[in-house]
Length: 174
Image (cartoon, rainbow, N blue to C red):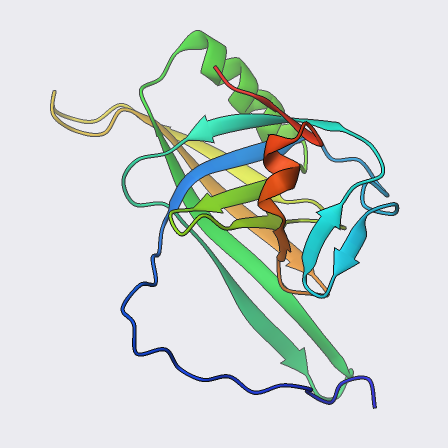
């Protein structure tokens, strides 16, 4: 049967796991963008074309989590992604991008501190709500808070790190 598991897992005695997100890469939504992609299990290992992605470096507490929502009566099992990203300091250039981001539904690749890359919104894109804060005092947060939401039929796929460095995803950094 297609939903039977095929492997187990040993828990490592090493304390070498790292959490957190150090950057996100945003690609404009393109329906069927991954139709020509090569998947090796749960990892994207090749793409049929090259795509621009825009890098946002992060510091502090940022997260993207996924929850499995199942409905036994409907026979469905989906994965809902949610996350919060903070971008410090407001400026006119970033604000223009935030307005566009809030009106689109991009694909988002999250780079973890562990060196992994995960693709969110691969088929349906990611809804992004943008909020601003100026702080009440000089030492309080001034910037943008992005709230991410996605619904997919699979957990976020891993992206082979070579795709981020060989030009398949053409990284546009500021």
